[in-house]
Length: 379
Image (tube, rainbow, N blue to C red; front, side):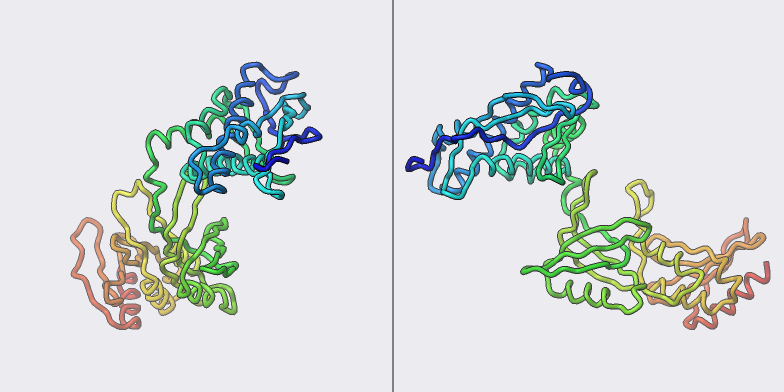
């Protein structure tokens, strides 16, 4: 080994294998048109090595050529399994006695493609590899063909023509949709893990699926821990978060509000949770604010005060502004009770084809319950 840490390998060392699948790679050998991808892969490794070397030598502005040349590959054979080119390292360059620049460059390239697959192009470029160099790899892949980067024995990253095109499109027109957004998620907390400057959590979402996220302030941990520690585990939480959303993933970066919601077990509890979990779509013609949890609790009080048949037949919904309502349609009459800003009950009835009657105001649930029973009975 010389003073710069360069040493010739006494035995050829294999590079971590790439696997080319489907399409032209189902035949014997490898199409000559695809050989260019192996050259581009070597250039990616060299660019990653350049970035790593500069990071380890902060005062340097130029990377010695021998550093770049040491990260070179030789194609010696093909293995079955679609096409697995056997690539050997032509030389090894250590920056210290326990550092392998080639392995570090391999890991960085794999990490860059993992980021692209997940729609995190900025994270890939932040690794010091130019986006144009990343996009040069795989440009001759057909629609069905895939390239697998084997990261570990159990894990690999699969790259395709569609993923490459999507990444190029994002680079040409930055995806402002992937900027942090304020979103709400509803479900049951299933775990919290604390770290030095915050922590992570898992949320089993109402309607299915599990979502992970992070938080970075002690108050969020306190609120999340309180919700997790509920004895019966039935209390839903609504989390207001800052998150980045792409077609491939959702990354929750921080928690800004934790709200607990629980009502007694009842035939309508599931419908109240549905309202809590409602997420307006971009196609909605009217903006809907999130439903207030206090509104849902008032509706629950109203339904609990009504006879069973009226409670279970009520239609529940949310008006613009996030105000929750319960309504009944009988014969030619619509009867509605809505929760107002002050959490009081506003009620009215409308005969189909006529103008709505004047709105009534109720402070007490017993009074509005009696009014609903009378109004529905009249129809």
